[in-house]
Length: 579
Ligand code: PEP
Ligand code: MG
Image (cartoon, rainbow, N blue to C red; front, side, top):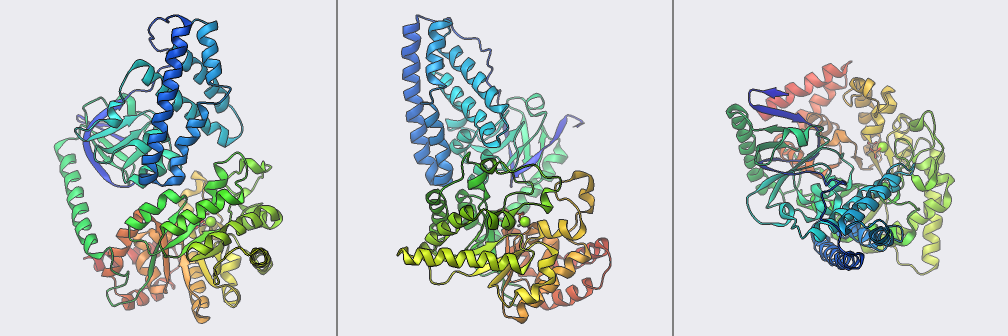
């Protein structure tokens, strides 16, 4: 949308924060490329071999650097790319084309990479489809080196920039210097892409999925970027700039307030203490969790290891990932959730049949209890990691006692076997359940007799309570955590657990919503786990709230009949509290 001279663009905010800088546009590489005329095949082959070794050195050096900035697990992405240099389908074919088709080295690399990437992109397997980006990535590196180009946007020191790209590849992301690249706009990509995870780890604000990015933004344009809301404004008008500067000033004020608060315990104005934790999906996210003052990991979604691999990850790979998180959290508790696939998360290695109601189907604990070997392997890996720091185990989507008891029995069996083999494991590993199915919420008083802790997963609890598919845009307006039925279930779980002296956490998105904070504090929620980016705001807000006032508010809210009334009551309360 154009307003005066400025252009407003929207996309998906994939990494929080704001930025203002001149654009550096990197146009996508073109496969038809105007290449220099080919020399003798023997000369082209020698150039190719030299370029391959240069890329190999570059990747190894970058992997070493990346391990420091984005964690070892993510740095491995670069080593996967290195392995591709030796893939028999790739480089030997490039060498053959130089000879057979008399192509230049650059043209041969691009031709083979495009063909290979197109074949991969057409496959059914999501993991292999994603590898198309890696093939293009490697080809781009080879061509850059063959042409003698420098990677100026990514490597040079100089003026800060907002980098504008077609598709940010993971290896690009690991090399970005946050002092130089203040923000990223990409035409494609989403929140769960590798590149997005890496940008969050680096703290670089970013907006992906901006369809018009490359047409609307030119090199040197001034770009205002809001990675939290997924917006950018190109060549902003004076009023827009003013509003942006006000936002930056507010950010600075919050930052200063935060500096004073970061290491203080999270508590309300009148001293009610709560625990603030982070949700993570990969070991790389530990850095952001710690930077935002998380006192632990309230939810480690372990799916990433499974979704990104063409095969099932073995015990060793899982153990390494869990141990990395536990060690980097330095004694803070890590809540590891056992595998939650099915629903909207497809697991290529299991080749699960399509279901007409996947969220009501073969998912999470249901699948694990049937695929015993899968479940046992994961539990062994978690048990081994428990020797390196405090670990808690969380079972997803529990809807009955049978499931909880069966899951616990498998855990105890695996534990006994580890001990018999002399494998060191922690003496005390609390076992908890996700409360994300209304059946579990309604039985919370009984579950509280057996489980060590609860974690309320509002993302699913909302969809199952109000019968609204969380991924269906058509009914998105009906999906509301402030629906009074959801609020009552949450209240019931907390009360039932507290009667038995058991702690209750929340790891669904509601825990990170400022509007929910007074309600959750009033209901007595003990452990709040959220995306690292949300922690600061919630902690600052909690310090302004009075828990006894919030308890009175919660009692009032529990008597309300509609989500709109609940929201209105909370908004009014927050306005008064934030004054
Ligand atoms: C939830 O359902 O609230 C939750 C945290 O789990 P996920 O979003 O991974 O389903
Ligand atoms: Mg869930």
